[in-house]
Image (cartoon, rainbow, N blue to C red; front, side, top):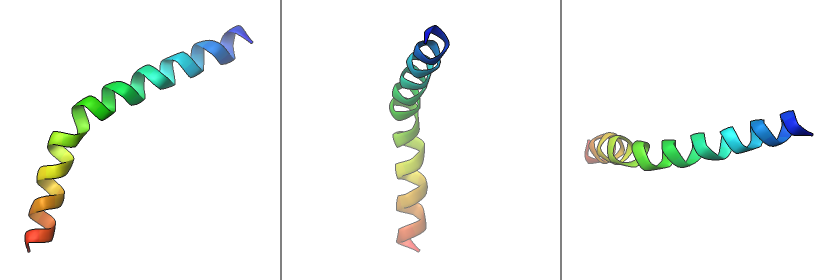
Length: 36
């Protein structure tokens, strides 16, 4: 249970960090893709 809790906590932190970092890069890439 401790391992599962640790993995879930790490996953949540990773997802939050990814969501805070990813949108700026993703939106520029997607906007560039759709502008073509």
